[in-house]
Image (cartoon, rainbow, N blue to C red; front, side, top):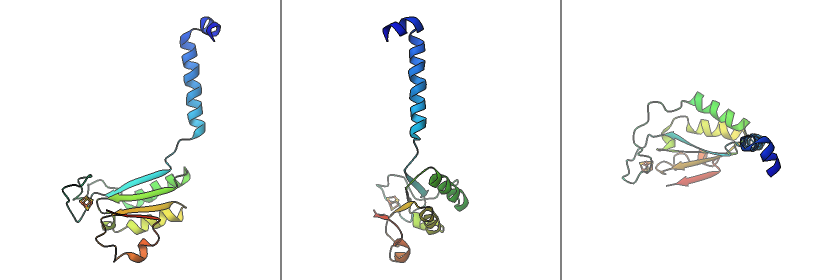
Amino acid sequence: MEIIRKILGKKYIQEYILRNYRSELRKKALHPRLVQWIATYKCNFKCDHCGTGAGDPLPDELNTKQIIAAIDSLAKIGTYFFSVTGGEPILRDDIFEVLKHAKSKGIAIGLVSNGYATQDYIEKLKDVNCLSLA
Ligand code: SF4
């Protein structure tokens, strides 16, 4: 290695290592396997301890078409778990449509809820692979 370094120079060696390292990263195709989506900042509570500062929805939250397109992209690159949180995701009218779509793409689904309306949605919640009530 020392003789090569003397002949080619230190800079060449560094570039060679960097080039090969980048190539290795590309081969490993680093993609998100688990994705958590803050579906909305809207929440029916305003807890003092809230880590996300939930309460009112943001003006630029993804609409149904946008999140469905994002899920399609995630499915293509191998995401296998998609979880929604908030705010309170159940306050979105489309949340079960979105979760159903993810599941139809072969992605396991999770839901984090404050639990205020779990009784109302008990049938739909049976499809959720990982339910967290907090
Ligand atoms: S219920 Fe959860 S998301 Fe809503 S304000 Fe309280 S801690 Fe935040």
